[in-house]
Amino acid sequence: MFQPNRWFFGALVVAAYALHVFQRDRCPRHGFVAGVIYPPIFTLHEYLAHRFLLHEVPSRVSRSHSGHHRYNVDLRRIFVPVPVTLFLGVTTVCVSWAVDPEAMPSVVMSMIVCYLCFEYAHYAAHVPQETQLLRRLRKHHLMHHAKADTKYGFVSAAWDLTFGTYGAGDVPPSLFVPYPVVPFVVSDARWWEWTAILTASLPLVVTTDENAYREYHRHPGNVLTHVVCVPLLVWSVLACMARVPVANGVTMAHVSALSLTVPRMSDRVDVITMAWMLAMACHASKRRFSLRVVCTVHVVSWWIQIVMGHWLCEGSRPALMDSLLPSLLVAPTAVTRDLVSWLHPS
Image 1 (cartoon, helix red, strand yellow):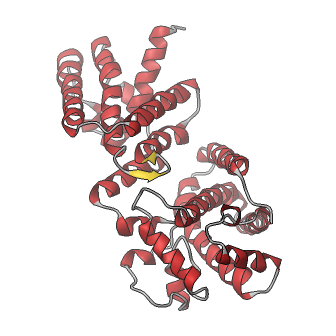
Image 2 (image 1 turned 120 degrees about the vertical axis):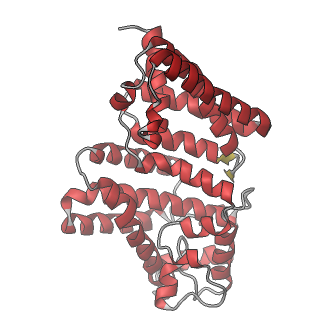
């Protein structure tokens, strides 16, 4: 059956972002529905579809899936066929529209993101990867291939444990979490990998206000120190995150650069911010820098901003003293806007 390709996945990414932009100001429950309510429903949907549609009910789809079990390294059989994906997607859209029309775009956005996580994780389970983050997930899924009537839930084992189809094997507590991929990732994550994962996810859950940030940065000297030092701070953080690989040359530095900029993108300044942060992530991921150099750049950049910028020039305390996370997350966009306004004054 017809397999998805990079154009199909790319179109879904664009659709998910468009839905996010459409809903973030229109529906106050957008983040809660997309990030908390729907993902467990997706894992249940995935469990039921895998168990009954792909295994227990004879059909053309189940026969195609049995070919995947026989040839589990064949890349032409790894992804869920597009017709099946569209059928399940349309079903979800219809049900969510009937239950809550206002939240339906949030559900669809979350469904697309969960689906992309699922397909990436399934691909990573069958193709050797550098990272150890998904090692337990690969082991879990290959046990399903060895004994096909157990472990139907791929991105979470919560529903297998609920319905008694988990089979043999130890059950780490994290596998009870019914969210895509997360239980298997954190099962093997070390503390610095945990830190990188949580840092990359912060922009998705923390709101930022650039106008409030501006209240602390009015003096030209203070603004100049931030224009120079904030990119250096960003580089030092990305250089640390580049030590955590994801797959195929992608590191948590790439993930962090995108997660910080893409959800908030609204004008050309956000595009420019994403470009330079992604360039820094690519540079940091290609070469492992000394931690001594990275830490020195990080500390000196903070010292220049706080002492020279805020205390000497601005005569006030930094914004992070009042709102730590929002200030850190909005700073790259703010300094980009300052630089663009200097180069191209309106």
